[in-house]
Length: 163
Image (cartoon, rainbow, N blue to C red; front, side, top):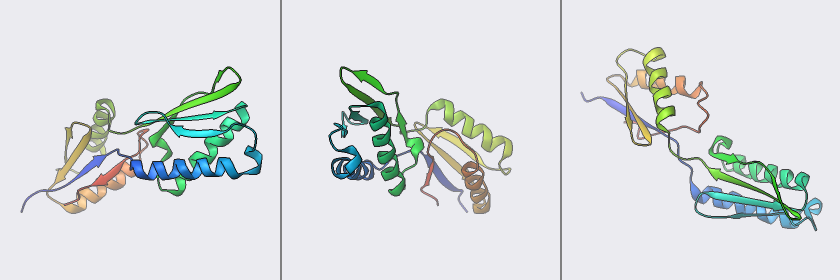
């Protein structure tokens, strides 16, 4: 029998993020406490989201609204890296980026964790920005998934291609 395997990835469904962004933008335009504050949220590039507001408090409140929409769409907050608020003239701006892919540093941490604490006979291979975990026993793979879910690597992990 061939080895069973699955891939560990860190990807974000851009359409879901886009939906969350549009929901947040709609809420910013309709909510009473955001009236006349210049609060807005928009894409600036492929992976960057920019928030604007007249005051830092309204900017942080707009960020909370966006994070709430991300959570409702089942997108981990680890996938959105928000920067620091910066004043630009009379407007406060905040830029955040979507974090996708597993860096080689994080991939090495994950493989070390699997080697040290995972079941025997489980192999992990780094393949670009994802990780392939394979074993002869499917139960061992389930154990590795639960092990990785219990650990915080600072990135959002998804488990795909389970065969």
